[in-house]
Amino acid sequence: MKAATAGLLCAVLLWALLSGCAQQQTEEPEVEVYQYNDHLYKLTHDEPFSVNLYVSVGEDGILVVDTGLPLQTQDLYEALREISPSPIRYVVLTHSHPDHTGGLERFGEDATLIAHENALMQEFFHLPPNPLFDGKTKAVSEPLSMEFNGEEIAFIPLEPAHSNDEILVHFKGSNLLCTGSSILPNGFIFVDWNRDGSLDASYDRIEMLTQEYADVPFAPAHGEDMDSRATRAWMNEMRKSQAAVESKLNEGLSVDSILATDALEPWDDYTNFPNADRFWAATVARHNGIFEEPIPPVVEPMTAVLEEEGVQAAIKRYYKLQSKSPDAYRFGERQLNLLGYQLLYRDRVDEALTVLEENLRLFPLSPNVYDSYGEALLAAGDTARAISYYEKAVEVDSTFENARQVLQTLRTTDDM
Ligand SMILES: [Zn+2]
Image 1: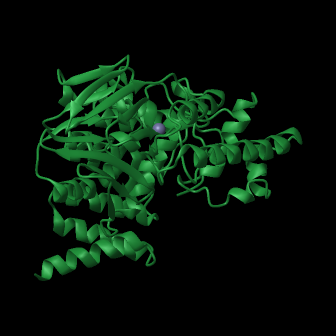
Image 2: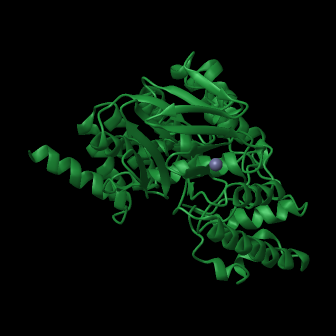
């Protein structure tokens, strides 16, 4: 994935993360299952980055905490079904960022959604919220608890820190606390400034967790479980790396130039998100009042038009904005690819094809546009044409791994 512009924060990062997944899709399904006790499990999917789901399975049915990225849904769902065929009664969100909500539809078919009241009001990705849970939601605005599979589970709403729609999920009998993205082992603190997040509040959150839940193991949404001691050590590293960035900022360096120095070298292995160092440096800069104005992606106005006037109008808007205000938005192959995949994720295959077709016209020298179009054709059930587009991707760039892998799979299946 190409490095994002410094200062671009959460929503944009998350768009970028999702589009970055496109090339990973044909990797072997990789879900690691860890069992805490007779009914509590952790499911970890590592591609394109590590995401954990926590699952309670027992005679009351299944409760799932978080649902991963859209592209992880199938693998995660299959892994869950290997553990149990029971009905999924509850889907719980630690918060509503897209690396937690990707499988909502799949996991939530017969479930009640439990989430922070703010999460229930978010419009995921600027597209209308999923109507799936209409009338089947439990908004957490004050601490709630319930008995499920033989233990008490508490849901505790939090003050804004990483985001403004977070809850803790405390499996009391199992003595495990799902901390969402409050703690990011082997990663940097991530702040969603667009949702009232802040760095100070993030540190306060970590302090609070290590004090109030000193004896409870933390089960983060990304990375390995940590106890409060390890969490404190991690927070120390955060403070040190923050100071390292700040000393460069004080020398007048920009985020980009800081990344070109060895300032963050001691934390080279903090890679739980793509571009984690860049977002961290930008976060520290913003914390210090240095705000590198992000240029919004053109998909933002396009999705608004899409919902009001349809896909053709959205594409027209792309060209209009590009000619009228070329510096006000980010344009390019990646933008239409993003929109195409967003539609694909929502099963709006025809619209996805229309958008991705435009990318074929605009960027005929990119292998990825053929690869994406091929994927949409597969979703549309047109395998023969999909193969021809994957072939075209390889023709444009013989090293384009994703297309090669898909072709191999499709040809093998064809032979059978
Ligand atoms: Zn998040």
